[in-house]
Length: 613
Image (tube, rainbow, N blue to C red; front, side, top):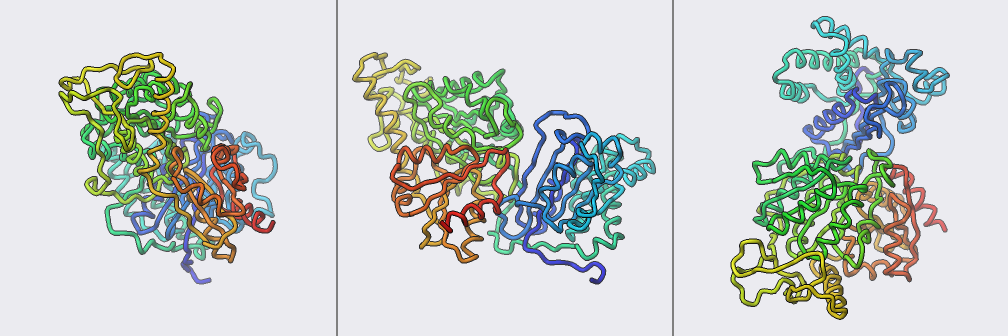
């Protein structure tokens, strides 16, 4: 091939891997941002270590960041076309994620005897078989970076922090990118540190020029297809946690309520609290509580006072919030609970993804304590599902749990920023001051939602609390009244189904196999079904975001198919829930509990086997 021959590809997956502190998350973010700004659709998957500071050069300390770019990207991709491995441990733990024939870039300076030993590598890390299966680029990244740092008067520790920029420069050359956008980012980020700006720009340029001089790369330069039919608008690369925070801010503005978040930091949900704390100018009030219980109780107090009240957490925190959630159900106050799910039980896998909390969200309270459960399905649409959760909570006077997960919360996508005025209206069910007919549990005849009387509203003195009340408000231990109020609270949640859209089915209309998913598995499932149909199979697909209550036509859909497979990142929680309501439907599970998202390839293998039966 001639020098600098460019290969056109529909999509490309790049994976950055290195020790904690090697800057792999930043490299991945800068590459995804540059790709988005040049017209690519993107999806990312950060893969953090579970330990805060695992020993240097060990498998436990490896941090990764995968970026999938191209035209209409559904997921962060299965295996990568390019792997960057900054030390032996990252090569050993991440080579399994590289496609056969992939380009593997290593910092050869880090492959010392000590580092190899710590990574548990006893043989030659670059065997003949590996050299045949991959294109290995052994780049002297550390020594090049150190030499540049020396020339600018930087010490070794400062120079080492820029190693990721050398690797990023190689990737930019291989993907036909210019350096201008990243230069501008470096200048903004380190505006008060001119020496750091100069060093990072020099190292980035050196990496780019190193790749330009390397003959083995000249035939591997990739021009990735741009997304040509994106609607016009203002876009940004956004993580699911930031999108969730923005959705809550938009709901507060649209509803005219003050936004209050009472939370306790927990991986992987903390960034929601951090993002809202940055936006006090938009009216957000953020309270970092001393624990999970205080977080939700402060939110219930804020809801009683008339705020759009929220709390954010992950699985262990949701467990601690369960008693207070029962109080919110009993008082029938609007409350939004964001659960960014992670691997469990206990502290489990705090930096890994899982759909582990569905049963807890549905049933994890004492007594009969129904509430609404929703699930976001992409990093970008976390915005809309957070907004929707707030709308339902305020209009139906109920707590709402929104399930996202670590894959969505930490991952990112392109997001078209909407105008708040174009979003659906939100009309809180506020009581009218001096209403002589007001009663605490007087209900709307259609929704069964009670009225929200705020402290200070004239003529509306009343009592609510955790003890059972009668419809007029006084405390009641009457058996018939308790049965009536229990039924009313359940029916109120059931009637939310009258205000949500019917469930949709995509794929082949003549399919015998229906694939069912929920929450954050949407990207991989969508692509797997699409590819199988393109290959001549007949597969249909339906994805659930409304979990409780389910859309009204759910049973009609499930009864149409001879074969149904329910795919989820747990041991079958959604399948069990569906079976309780539709036991006549022939549903089977496909489960994965590894702290990792689904791969398209494994899903296609599963569906093909079912079709062949």
